[in-house]
Length: 445
Image (tube, rainbow, N blue to C red; front, side, top):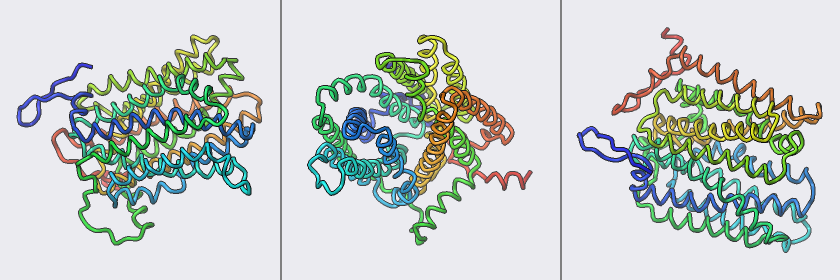
């Protein structure tokens, strides 16, 4: 990919883009660890689904498995964020990788575990442990990126992370599906490959020389609960962060409905086969990768809050088009549009948090966002499942989700303009300004 050239404050020209951020040795190690672990995660996600279903043949068991994957985020991520802001983030990521490697390797061995607990229950326990390690790893990684690249490289760095994930989702699932099918019924080698990728990620992270201990202005003497509350107050006291949290949570309801009903909609309502669904998922990943590449060429995102609201609007339009689709091509184009949304939404949201939040609070803010979004998303899943079951169709919940996405996005545009949030962003080459809370802003007005 072509690397752009910018001029820094000293007048010296330097490149930005993927090549530039990979030129930072420590960020390159972080990214390489992410790349190999993403491959393993994509393979194990398929293997876990097949393995659990082979054990039980139960839809309820699959639902419980999904709950085990998201429950640690809701339960633990709040206090995890506190320790991400207290401990060495490099060590947190390495330990998380080791725990993930062990837990995922033990899953196919559960058939040999003591029989006083049913095998599927052992799978639930190990999946919960694996997901708990994820809840530690991802806030630590997101909080570490600003310490490894320059401030005007954050867009490129986060774009590279997003593109890597999308490319893996584009390429690996079809190959992983073949691997899983060949390795039935115990899938041990598929889980072993995943375990190895986490081990390789830990090795790559071990080579990071940058000190990833949070830069703290003072030693915290508050209780764990007090420090969690401090993170929440920081968000509430920041107009832009408050907007991002509220907007993300409002989108999460529709996201939960879509996640819960996507496969029933594809298979039941549209009658698509596994090959066609594979094409759809690949199309979504492909447009996501293209969006990440495009955004990586930006030194700074202009009007990032409008871009976030636009992503929600684009998602609503895409879901509407898909719900009303009359042929496969229309569905394919609709899903391709939706595929770009996750990237267009996540990159500016992540960059804004990295730019606005102090290092000593960054882990808490990322963790709290994860908790808020996931908890509301789970509620959305429940709403979608009950609604579709009651009416005997996935179309009404889909249309409702699309409508909500459009309405929330339009309200987002209105809120950004009315509160003049972009004027509160720090200017280029300036230190981040202290942002007043919404209540304080209203009091001044």
